[in-house]
Length: 290
Image 1 (cartoon, rainbow, N blue to C red):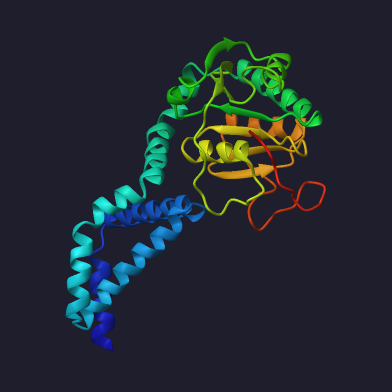
Image 2 (cartoon, one colour; image 1 turned 90 degrees about the horizontal axis):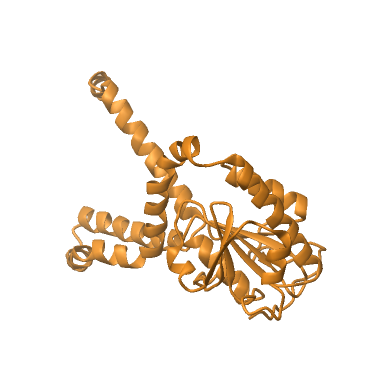
């Protein structure tokens, strides 16, 4: 026992400052990796990968030759398989890694609070009015990830933000009302845009195409996506693959301001399988949206 503690003491004495820095960096990396995977479909896939690694260690420990042979061949193509399986999550992570370090520098130069404030006010007022009239809407606010591919599917309007113009775009007889409105740099950039649908199997079945598109867009980019529900008039906000609901003009305005100006956001209610109730406490009904 004395020798055991002596070996530990000798090992501790050899640890340098750079070793501590190395440990801290690795810990932070694993923390953000866990945080990134926790609420995503890739989290379950990651558990499967970790299980295979654990099985490989057990097979090596007890000399299980058949399992060793099988897992050895599996791991030979494992890197390629992981890239294919985790492609949406890897893309989202790399986009955020590439965009976040430049966010602070960008805010020093060309980002102006006044046009963003105006846009937030106009969009929040329009979303609230559309909710009162139970008009379906899908509004995407571009952030770090450029949405040029989505813009190409719609019609560029490049207009100053206006509550009346937003309401006119989503009027149910308007030619562009079925698509999404994309906002870039505080301006109404394009309307009638097509968005990718979420492939998340845990989304409640009550949600229609419009909300699935909102979740899918937020899964594949850093965008904030506002969705209006035709059936109930409930206004929702999709962020990083999660849909939050029950916003009024004031709460939506405050939420957008936290994300777009202060750089953080805090939601209150999450629309998942574990929370199928509307804001008024009644059970959710089927949603029919184009």
